[in-house]
Amino acid sequence: MKSIISIMVAIVVILISTPSMAQSDKQIKKDIRDKAMKQARKEAKKLKKDGFKVTPGQLPMEKQIENTWIARYQTTDDGSKKWFVADARAVGETHSAAKLQAIEVAKVNLAGQIGTEVAGLVETNIANAQLNAEDAASVTETMATFKSIIGSKMGRTNTLFEADKTIGKNKEVFITLSYSYEDAVNTAKDVIRNEMKDNMKIQSEQLDKILDF
Image 1 (cartoon, one colour):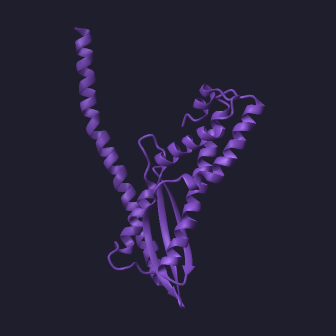
Image 2: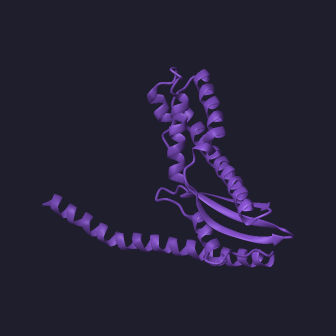
Image 3: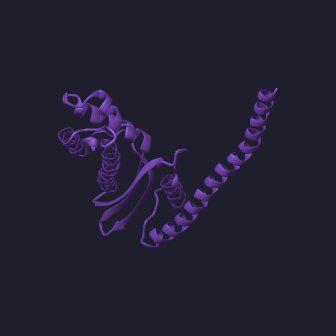
């Protein structure tokens, strides 16, 4: 009987707490959007004053910037960031030329962010894997290689913002790209495993601990 009562109490607690949890999540999302809208209005005003415009058919500048800031603020349920976000500007003789250059610069920025983030996570886990100094040095060397090639392993990026302005006979393009944190981490793990596959000194169990993030 006591067992049944305990179960019923637990169910009541869950039913009571679930709406508040949902309300909390809803409030968090509202706070994120409010912050993003505030940043968007301020940034759009500055960019327009500087001469930047969006091309016909695109979302309004304020909306694009709002989406950009939402991506910057968004986190997963465990508190991790949801997106890597990078800005870049480039000048070219045409919009297309400037845009391609800006995209490449932004991708390099994203790759740098990913490399730094993953390297930090790996460094934290090296101690947990109980590696000796030689093996730890080998992992560190692998990470240096990883950081130099992660950019070429990235998948499709998302364009959050695009605007341009005329500078004499040239065009300056402002681009903001995002890349999924989850996809970045999974790609990074695959790259590191591939780089470490010929290192017979590192046991698979140790590698699993190093990449447990």
